[in-house]
Image 1 (cartoon, rainbow, N blue to C red):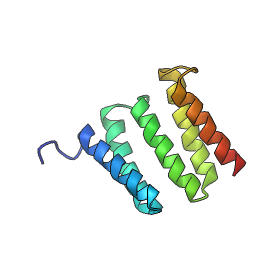
Image 2: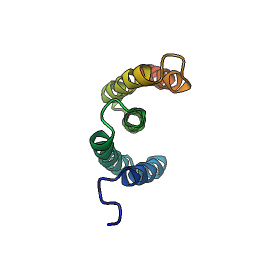
Image 3: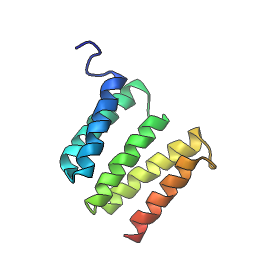
Length: 107
């Protein structure tokens, strides 16, 4: 209760937990926690923040593992738009997002 349920550190903890669950193959629970993380980030940072883009990318990764390629691609596109706007086209995170999108298209 020290920080409260809407604090950025809580979002970060949700993201870390979701990452572990994703690695373990517990995709549904991972998505639940990423969604909680995203809700806090949207409320505290706004939709155009690189951290929000990162969470969208993480969620897209889970969806791709679940073979939900259309939704994964939508989230990668959302991520890419934010990264291009905030970091620019030459940033390594932009390149990484393009690579992830290519993998989804390949699948």
